[in-house]
Amino acid sequence: DLAAVLGLPQTAVRVIAPEVGGGFGVKFNCYPEDATLAALARQLGVPLRWAETRAEHMLATTHGRAQVADVEAAVEDDGTVTALRLHVTADIGAYPIFTFIPDLTLMMGVGVYKIPSVDLKSTCVFTNSTPVAAYRGAGRPEAAYYVERLMDLVALELGLAPEAVRRRNFIPPDRFPYAAPTGQNYDSGEYDRALTKALEIARVAELRAEQRARRARNDRHLLGIGLACYVEMCGFGPFESAVVRAEPEGTVTAITGTSAHGQGHETTFAQIIADHLGVDFDRIVVRHGDTLATPMGNGTGGSRSLVVGGTAILQAALRVRDKARRIAAGMLEAAFEDVELADGRYRVRGMPDRALGFAEIAAKAYAEDLPPGLEAGLEATEFFRPPQLVYPFGAHVAIVQVDRETGQVRVRDFVAVDDCGVRVNPMLVAGQVHGGLAQGIAQALLEELVYTPDGQLATGTLMDYALPRAADLPSFTTGETVTPTPVNPFGAKGIGEAATIGSTPAVVNAVVDALSPFGVKHLDMPLRAERVWRALAGGARLPFARSAG
Image 1: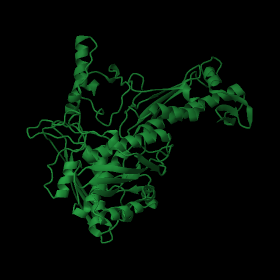
Image 2: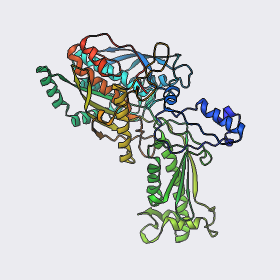
Image 3: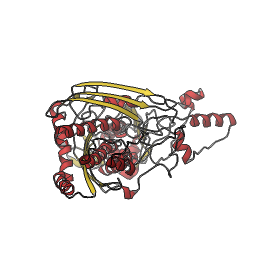
Image 4: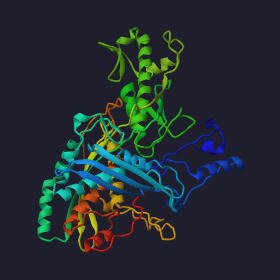
């Protein structure tokens, strides 16, 4: 983008992304200030620095979500959904940056369900407000919200348990790979297993007994139980690059086209290299975020880093390992086929005493007496093009308490069972899940961008924009199922956005469940105390406003 604006070849523009704490979509696109600063620096011939204020950031960087949807379904008496109509109207602000976000919503419109017939439509509208673009999940949270609210409404109308309606409509495991009517090709899934595990961990049967007892005694604090099952698309292409290079002293440098902002790429990618090269973890350096060093990359977004970038790292590491085995074969005077990597050593199969460490092989790679046919050096560059997307999924259960006198909602417990295929680093997965749950719950209960009638942003500071504190969130209980994908050699799927996608509808379903004895069937987000209190009091609904960050 900068090269095009400045009229320069890409090779003449160097972008360095320092360590960044979080991105979530707002840093995905280029802003006018980026190009303006670069142009001024060239014109003046001096380095320039610009730092936006918090108020400028809230006002001028892209906002998220901002959709309204009309949802209709054809449903059999047993709860089977036979057709879905989903028409989405998306506010894209005054200056369009992306118009594909609502298209992503439609692509995931049927969620985890085998709905055979769909009528999908998206309309983007201009408004006198800040542009709307990607925000953690980018179109997929909206899809999960619509279809999961629908499933609860179907259950309510037919007098069925919410989990029963979902199970009747799940895509069965033997139908994968599954060609959805939205055009998506789901790679793998076992949705009922995730839901069953979430219900068991949450002890939903006991919770419903508690709920009945509370209602019988007309308790002030209403108990609500909400379910949500989700699937998302991630691992976007078109490709990602990686360089893995062994230095003469035996350390390894890896360069990736993805750019980390808190996900732990340095840890995961180093772990992959260590596992496949026989190098100590602390002797591996992962570099990213510098266009001068990276061959070519498509960055981080859409939960693609491990699935696409990690696969490129793996392929480059395997090529380095292959050459290391050839060098070791010459040093050990053995056939290439007889040299294996075992227990961190390159050794002759069946003869563990004839072995070399990686550092010895790396030093030899830069020596003059290499085996015939081998060039000096020990490195590889790889580009991985994913054959298709991957589809992580999960089931969430939210347990809330609603104060019927004040409308205040408290999330008492939250259970998340997420399936991202094989987990390369479970600790990093847990971190992504916890952060995603916090954002998803905050969207359901707190976050809202409000404009005055004359178009001024009224929630332009953190004094006005409601963010959750630690005290607003429960201790999360997480679980997992593992359904590998055949799309990449890890069997892994993305996890960076998944928890945000499932948590929001689970919380809304829980609040509506708590209010159902009062005839409440639906409430628009955010479910702050006043809106809930008005619903309990039978008052007018509050006017619509953007309900995300």
